[in-house]
Amino acid sequence: MKCPFCGNLESKVVDSRPSDEGASIRRRRECLECHKRFTTYETMESLPLVVIKKDGSRQTFDRDKLLGSMLKACEKRSVPLSKLEEIAQEIEQSLQNDMEREVSSAVIGEMVMQKLKEVDEVAYVRFASVYRQFKDIGTFMDELNKLLDGK
Image 1 (cartoon, rainbow, N blue to C red):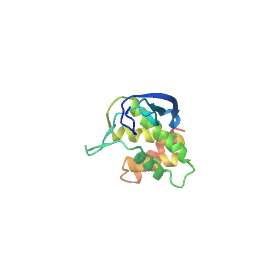
Image 2 (cartoon, rainbow, N blue to C red; image 1 turned 45 degrees about the horizontal axis):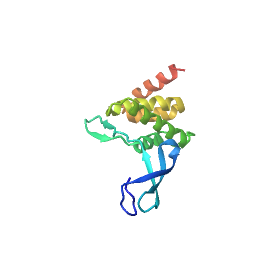
Image 3 (tube, helix red, strand yellow; image 1 turned 90 degrees about the vertical axis):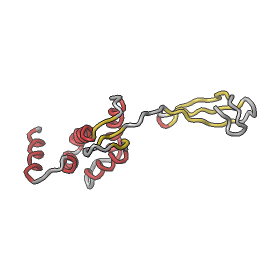
Image 4 (tube, rainbow, N blue to C red; image 1 turned 180 degrees about the horizontal axis):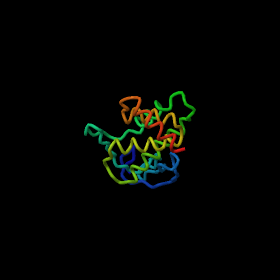
């Protein structure tokens, strides 16, 4: 690791500890040339995840965008933000674990709907109405009836 003070490439690790709830490692290092100390952070490299949209375009997966869509569906509902953040993290982790670098927005939408259905049925129906682009009240009622039949 290059010393930020003198530029020497040789240093020794003085202390290591987990940081960011285990997502990275904080290391205190000491330069072997000038003996000054500095801190480095080591994080796992994650490969970018690409979302294939309905129109065929591609964009990088954005957890904040996913969270924003769930927040809209849960507006004025008693769903804690921490629960939505947990869902977004679970979905992103699941997608990363699949090792596919490209995923369709349809797959992500279905994952969100499944999670929201478990948390808040009204939020689920709101999300589904936008995601599935309900054309009329009949389509909307069909989805509600499926939800009621499941109980």
